[in-house]
Length: 69
Image 1 (cartoon, helix red, strand yellow):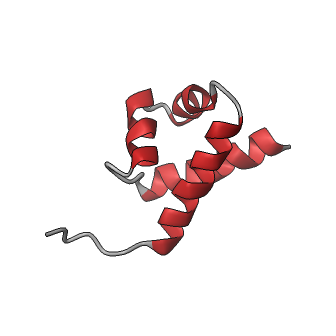
Image 2 (spheres, rainbow, N blue to C red; image 1 turned 135 degrees about the horizontal axis):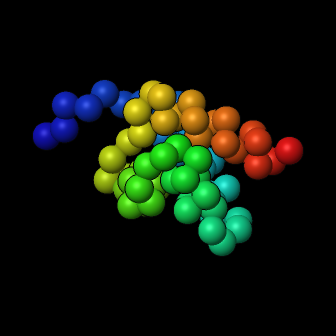
């Protein structure tokens, strides 16, 4: 049984990140580099194995905003 609280906003961010990364090849790698994390961490977030920290969630939002400009 999981003790993790539901986090609909974080789940929505991960869904948006997934769609964003699927749109172009290499975005998972670029995101990992931007956040200074290993690419497998990004893959774990996208697959639901783990969730990004609050700091990384903010970094994801910043990165997506920069890339979309």
